[in-house]
Structure formats: C-alpha cells, structure tokens
Image (cartoon, rainbow, N blue to C red):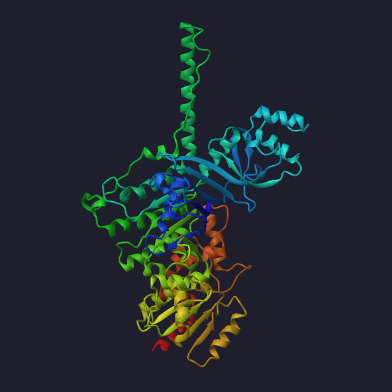
Length: 608
C-alpha cells in the first residue's frame, strides 16, 4: 500500500482540518516550531503509537474539542482479501473505497481520557439506502434471511457472495460518504479491518532529538525497522506458528474437558480456549539488536555525525535488499532533519541516498529540514512548505511551482555569484548524466570542466528539477549570463528551440544530441556493472524501444517483478548508478565521433 495523503484535525497546532499529499519522496520545509515534526509524529501515532504515542495534550488547546482525527488515504492496496476459507472479496466489492477509488482510514482519539481511547473508521462511498447500509455487520444467518426475503438465487454460504447479491438487488443504493466503524465492529467488518491492517505500510520514524543511551532509538531504530521489515516477509511462517499454537491449545482444552467429565460430568458442558494471537508490535518486541563499531565501541558512544551516517548505511542496505526481495508490505521512512551534525559532503550523500531509496518499489521517504544547503538539492515536486497565515496565525501547507520563491526567501537560498554559464537541460537525469560524463573526461583531461563541482556553471532544469535549479533560473534570468542548451534528439520541436538560442548572438549556444537521448551515450558495461543485467545500448530505438525501456524490461525480469518500471524510474536508476561508472574509455567507445567531448570543450571555452 502507498500513502497518498494524510488529513489532520485538532492535532496540536493543526486545529482546522488540513490535508497534505505525499510523493515517493516528500520534504517538509519551514522554520523552527512550525509543525513539520507534528506531521511525522501524527503518522507515527497512526501506524504504530510507539516511538510517539497519543497523549491528552495532543488535542489542540484552543479548540475546546477533545477528539483528534488522523486520516490516511492509500492507493496500491491488495486486489482481494480472504476473510475465511473460500470467502474471497475485495474492498471495491464491499463498497469500502472512496469515490476516487482510494482507501481512506480514519483514527479518532478521544483525548478527554487520561489514556486516550481509539476508534477506527473506513471512510468510503457506501450504500445508505434503508436495509442495505449495514450488511458488513450482519451475521451469516441474518444475511441468509435477507437473501430468502429477496428471493435471490444465490448460495446461502459465504458472506461476501450473499452481500454482493443483496446489493445487486437493491437498485439505487444511495451511495454516500460514510464513516464505517471497524475497530469495535463485529462480523465481517472486523475481519476486513484485520486483513487491511496486515497490509498497512511499515512506518519507521527517525527523530532529530534522540538521546544516547545504549538502548535508545539512536541505535535501535534502524535495527527495529530491519526487524519489522524481516517479520513482514515471514508473515506466512508466523501464521503457521500461530495456527499450530492454537491447535495445540485446543487439543489441551479438549483433553482437560474429557478429564473433567470423569470427575464431575455436570461441572462444565464445554471448555474452549479463547485464542488471541500476538500483535505485530509484540513480535517485534521479541528482538533487540545492538550495534558495536571498531574495537567493540558501542555506536551510541560515537559522535552524532557518525551515528547518523550509520543511518545512511542502513538506508543503502535496505534499498539493496529491496532490490532483491519483494514482499506485500511497503515501508515508509520518516527522517527529521537528516542534515544535523553532517559535513556538506555527507549532506549530499544523504540526499542522493534518499532519492535512490525512494525509487524502490513499495518504498516512500519523508523528510523535514530548514537547512538552505540541504533543501537546495531536493526535487521540486518533493517540497511541502509550511508557514503561518499572517491573518489567522494558523499553519498552512503549500505545494506546487508557486511555492519555490517563498521557500527560497524563507531559507535564504541564493544563487552563486561565481556563475558564468547557465547549462540548460530538460530534466534532472540529464544533470546527473552530464556531471558523470564530464567527471570522467576531466579525469583524462584536467582542462575540461568537472560539472559536478565547478561553481562557474549552474544547471537550469527547464522541465522541473530541484529548488536550487529553480532559484538559479529565477534569479539569474536578468543577469545576462551565457547559456548552453543541450536537448535530446527525440523531440523534433527542440530543433527550433535550439535555433532560437543560437540566433541570440549573445554568446549562448544550443545543440541537439546526435543520438536519441542522453541514455544512448551509456556503455552496456556500465549498466552491467551497476545492475548485473545485460542491455544492448543503441544510438536510436530498436522496435520502438530505447535504452531505458530495454533496461527496465531486463531489470524487472531479473528481479522477478510482475510489473515493468516506467521510463522515468528507469532513467533515474541509470542516472544514479550507471552513469557514475562511465569512464573516458567507455565514453570514447560509445561516442567515437567525440560529440560529448565537443560539449565539454565548448563549455570550457564559454567559461574562459
């Protein structure tokens, strides 16, 4: 399941209902004490209620209302659910989806009690017509009675089948948004919730203000997340264990009852065990993993920067593991202020790690930051800006292209005055590719620019990109800098755009690639070294398949994925892992005409 959005109401500073959408990588940006951490902690309460648990004081102090509502909306939920043997159904068939086809779960906490109580609802477009609105709470015999009353020709066994037939015979069911209680419900409403709960994403929160005891989450959180992920993969084995324990308990109860009847037959007519299987949290509590570093020094005794870099290593290891293993549960990593105590170089490593991790199937990453340097390199579409409305003093969460100017102003992100040339490309993957290609050629000829660290060059991503790229474009537009444009060959209209740039006579220059797109300059050995898959790299598409498409098919087949990743994710993977493995020799082999070398030579001349 994938988290699409969360809605908060009356939770801490969020008195009025507020909604925020989530991408694969989502970054909350804003000043201190503005509500960034509250969003992450609300999600922790919703999924786990462990690292942070709901308290009386979590209800907004000004509203006078004691209930807190946390509502999460999901996509990519299972196609079918099994209630009992042979009783297969789906969320759609049970009218448990919204009118947009999403799954919306609401948890309502009554903070009027010293220990807040919880009630869970499914918010769905559900039948409201009299006699058809509460079928999920009916017992089998009640459903059988309805089937007979309606004279339906349907088997009187299997609740999902009977409900489906009854609803089909109901005509206008008057579907409307309904809050269906599931946590305190009975019959199939409760069984359905149990099934849904088993598919909810694993949520791992890493807080910025953790302490440093041996048993604290500074050390334990990565391992707890690893244990949770491992347990999610062995759910079938756990179910077998629980089933065996239940069978053994029932056997012992039966034998005890037989023995009791020999002593006093009238004492008890039956003895039946009430079996309550351990929750996921209890299974996780059985395992505790510590981490020692060099010479047996506990991790929590090392510096805060080292401790946080261990988290990066964990993220990388988890990403690699997820490349090899597929499981039904997804995972959400929520990290507060990951740049804390990190050198700028390590901050860049962190950013790239998060970007890469968010590409994995069934994985989402949520960050908070108020660091200009860290935010500058984050993708535009990941940013959610939190600020207080000047009139109401209530927090507001903004997303979209119009937010980047205010984010830049709030965080103090400004362009580099050393910039002499604007390098304009189509997308973020072009930036990564050109940086890698230039670095390889610079290693062979130091007179050529290394675009990865040359402050005289600023990338401008014409189709989006990162906050830094947007800032550079926005503020440098009036500085009359020379522009170097590189467009892929795959769009014919780019030729006209290149011609317009070359007609400026201001020192700017534009070119279209001779090959189909930037990925066409990759060497197959670099792809194999990065992913262990063999992909034929051609200058132009073969059978309408360009390099990213052929790579996604080969990679998905190797990993055993049911679905092939889209071109966007394929391009991102190649940019992150294959392009950095390009050497000067590999470039010359794939580009014997020296086209890439010509780009770098032109950029060098424009700088000088």
